Image (cartoon, rainbow, N blue to C red; front, side, top):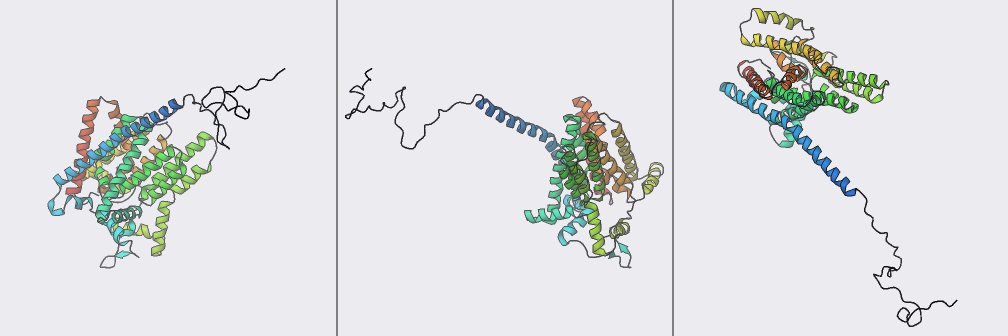
Length: 438
C-alpha cells in the first residue's frame, strides 16, 4: 500500500515534514532542549473554601479572645481607679502621698531586698534581742521588681508597682479563664470583679506586695492542671513557693489534680507525678537556703517569730480573738475584721456544697482555696493582717459570683457596684487610717 507523503506546505526543502505551528491543538509546539513537558495545572476542589474556613476560624478565635478580655480589662481598670480614688480621698497628707501608701509596711522590706539584697545574718535590737529582718520575705517578687526597675530605668518603687499590676492582670485573666471553664461567662465576669474590687483588702493587689504575683502563679498552676499541662503546673507551683509560704496550698492542689487524673485514667503517668513533686520544691528550697546562710536549719522560723510573732498555732490565737472582738470590742477595725473573716469561712464552706462541685477541676480549686484559708487563720500573727492574707484564696468568692450570675442583670450590676464601692472604701480606709492594716 503506498504511504502518505507530506504536502508541499507541510514539508521543508529537504522533504522532512515541518513541525506543527505553535498553538495548534492537535500537536505540541517546539520546546527548548532539556525542558520537560509541563503538567497541566489542576484546580484542587474546595481549596478556596478551606482557606476561607481557616481565615474565618482565625477571626472567630481572635474575636473570642477580645470578648474574653473585655470583662477582665474592665474589672482591672475600674477597680484600680476606684482603689486609687478612695485612697486619695481618705489618706492623711501627713503620712505621705498615694504612692507612699502603696509602698508602705512590707513593701519597704521588698524594696530593701531589691536594692541591697538579703542580710548576712540575724538582726538584733539595741539591747541584744533577736528581731525580724528581710530574710523573712521570699525572693521572687523583689527579684522581679529589681529586673523591672532596671529594664524601665525607673525607681525601685515604680518597678515594684509595675510588677504588681502586671501580675494582677495576669491573675485576673487566669482566674477568669479557670472559672469560665467551670461555671460559665457570667460567673467568671463577676468573680474577677469581686476578686479585685469587692473583697475587703483587694487593695493589696495594687500595692508593692507579693500577693498579686502569688495569685497569678497559683491561678496559672490550677489552669495548667485543668489542661493537664503537668510540668507547667509544677513549674508555676515551684515559683509560687518562692513567692509566699502559703504556696503549700498550690502544691496540695496540684497533687490532688494529679491523683484525679490517675484515677480517671486508671494508671499513673510520670508527668503528673513530676509536676506534683516540682510544685513542692520552691518553699523548702528557700527555707534551706536561709538556714544555710545563717547556720541554723530553723533560722527562717526564728526570724518570723522574733519579728512578727508568727508561728503555727492551729488557729488558737485567732479563735481567742473572735469572741473578744464580737462581744467586748468597740473599735470598728477589730469588729469588722472578725465579721468579715467569719463571712469568708462561711462562704468557703458554701463553696464545697455548691453546684458543680463534682466537675473536673473544681476539687483542686476548692482544695487550694480552703488551704489558703487554713494557712492564713492557723498562724499566730496579727489579726488585722488576716483579710490581706485571705485575698488570694478565690474560692470564697464563687458562691456570691454564682448568685450574681443567676440574678437579673440590673440587680446583679447594682449589687456588684455596691460591693465594689464597699471593698475599695474598706481597703483604702484601713490603709489610710489604721496604721497596721497590712
